[in-house]
Image 1 (cartoon, rainbow, N blue to C red):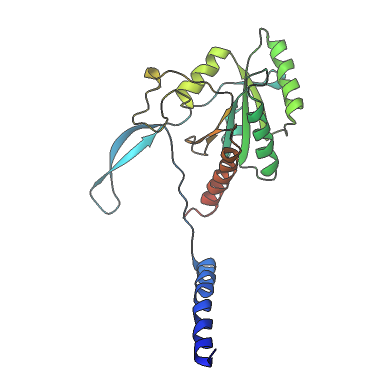
Image 2 (image 1 turned 180 degrees about the vertical axis):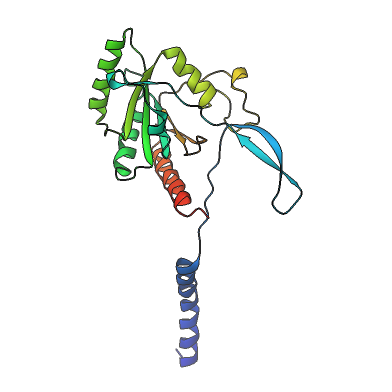
Length: 230
């Protein structure tokens, strides 16, 4: 090969490497996760003047749940960051979701902004409920202050799933979100991701291993967004 051709080939090989190094060192990545449960679109005044349409999304309201020991789970314990929600069903139906929760807990063990919440139907008595919550917490291997197992009456859980978390039979991205007109669809194998603003940011079918990978990835995306928010 002639020297001139050798130099030209070297330059052609070097250009993409230099471009990669430039983008890696000076570029910025921007990620955008969908926000679910749009309620309405409002007109707001733009900073540059004029008006623009802005979608208002549903926010999960404060939860009233019974935790182990008979205490009420404080919303401050959940709202310090984001949290992953599981509606637990006994009898093995929700086992894939429970395994996924354990994986998320281990993956984000040192990250205090990631928490987990498993919702369990309350038993017939308060004492039986406390016993069940303690048993499940031990069975799941929950870390105190990281993964919360809490209970509410079955009817309350169905209302939460439908009215707060958008677990309905229809697509949760539809506009507007009208839970009273949509049939509930409580799915024990599904996890939900709620961000620090109490918006629902994702639904994940834990029967699909790639959906669990997507959940972990999207949690990392939210953390990146919080750390690099302008």
